[in-house]
Length: 265
Image 1 (cartoon, rainbow, N blue to C red):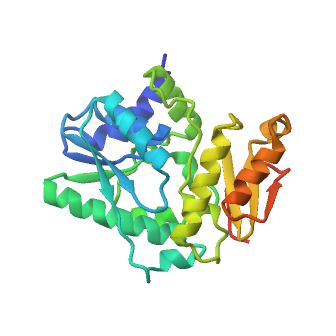
Image 2: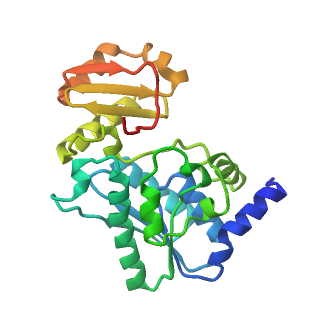
């Protein structure tokens, strides 16, 4: 059951959306899925949009399609194109600002063309912690973040997902493939494809659900949830090294500190 306090937060989060035509930026993660589910209670005029690009893994797109189907809501995949001269490829510390500005500008254009009154996303109240340049872009473009406005933290979002029996209740947080490249190092499509292939292979080994390949040129640095680091030692290390070297890495390393969000130095 949801507590009275949690129900109140949900009401506060969705009350500005009652009866409105809503376009939802939908990644298929727990946050955007909960947003879609709770908004269903206050309007029937909503649509899910999943953005695809070179820096979004194909696995995420397929999972988003499946979850949208579970919600039985209109869903569209929108291809976002980025000019080769765009600052995104230079990978500055505020890369997420430029990326979200690009994406949500196109979502706003789509909303206007199709008659939607407001664009919303899945930013939650916990997302204000740490290095979050993307939040500035959301504010600049007047994107409404119900979870954040309702004061719903990540832990509470998962509680809501479990209450509604959503399949994503325990789904780990994901980030775009560009986040695997250290700030200041140019991003290339070839590099993004290599990272995606490396992570896809490692996931076949049933390692930590919180898994990253940090790309340092000829070095692949594997990050796992700290409690799962020991698990990789039970796998065929020779096979792991061979497969990652096939992708062009010269050295394959394991980060003993474990997974952590990337931040500027």
